[in-house]
Amino acid sequence: MFKVAVIGGSGMLGRALVDELTQQTSWKVVATAFSRPSAQTVALDIRDTGAVERFIEQTAPDAVVIAAAERRPDVCERDPALARALNVDAVRTIAAAADRRGAWTLSISTDYVFDGTHPPYRHDNAPAPLNAYGHSKLEGERALTETTDRGCVLRLPLLYGPIVNWSESAVTSLVPAIAASAAPGGEPATMDAWAIRYPTFTPDVAVVIRQMLERHARGEPITGIVQWSGDEPMTKYEIAVRLAEALQLDAHLMPQHTPADATPRPHNCHLASSRLEELGIGRRTPFDIAIRQVLTAFPWQGARSPA
Ligand SMILES: NC(=O)c1ccc[n+]([C@@H]2O[C@H](COP(=O)([O-])OP(=O)(O)OC[C@H]3O[C@@H](n4cnc5c(N)ncnc54)[C@H](OP(=O)(O)O)[C@@H]3O)[C@@H](O)[C@H]2O)c1
Image (tube, rainbow, N blue to C red; front, side, top):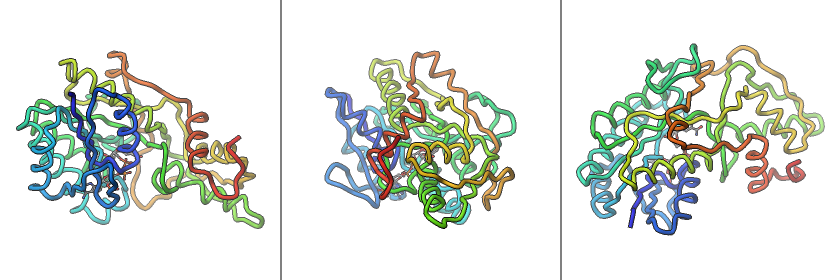
């Protein structure tokens, strides 16, 4: 039986992936969690080399997907040691342990490895990260490719999907401010209208990863670097307008046309998905449909059902 270990199965992407993979009845899926363990997950701290090695030995997976990371740019900026431990050193440890067992490792990376000045970016364009998060993820990519020939990096842009709290995704984290601006006497909410993002739905990414795993299971593993992205460009201001429409909130939104973040962020890192598309891999759910699914499953208190 084909066995997949999902490291970081409790995170936003990891949960969508576990949901997708467990529908493959002929596959066995073993998911790990750190601070949010459950009956369905194995507790694992990926900073603990011995624990990682024991987990891989005992699980004996055919493939390992690394969805665990520190993905918050502000935290990476403040705590580069934590960013390195999770985004670089742990990737090396996991990939080495998987390689010893002959397993294929898929590690998730980010569009923030690019500086955002010359989109669209192909997988082989030169990276030039602007912030600590992007630097740590680029080093993580190199840690994977240096450690194993049986590995693949999947770069992704801004993600959204089923959530367990509003702050889990940079898309849904806008909802509280949108709702506050719509309340009686509410102050207008200022939203970034400078950086161009390509919000990408985690269940679509889960399908992409499942399709990649299927190729591996048939003996045609994908190696090197691949990228996947939604195809609808939006600023956070435009995302907020669409969220307000879906929530039927009369929001007062103000576009901010110059960057105002403490952490430097790229302008437009559009990722070309051509390598996977040429393999017939991919699915894209339109944003307006996907976001209504998210808001229906996790309703904003006091809001009407998504329009
Ligand atoms: N979110 C985005 O917009 C975005 C965009 C581009 C790329 N990515 C990349 O996509 C991947 C998944 O991101 P995500 O948004 O799903 O992240 P997330 O929701 O923050 O999930 C992070 C996962 O890492 C686990 N984790 C944290 N510290 C750990 C530790 N010490 N040991 C073991 N596991 C640990 C968490 O476990 P617990 O929750 O149980 O503690 C959780 O399962 C990451 O590589 C990220 O860089 C994300």
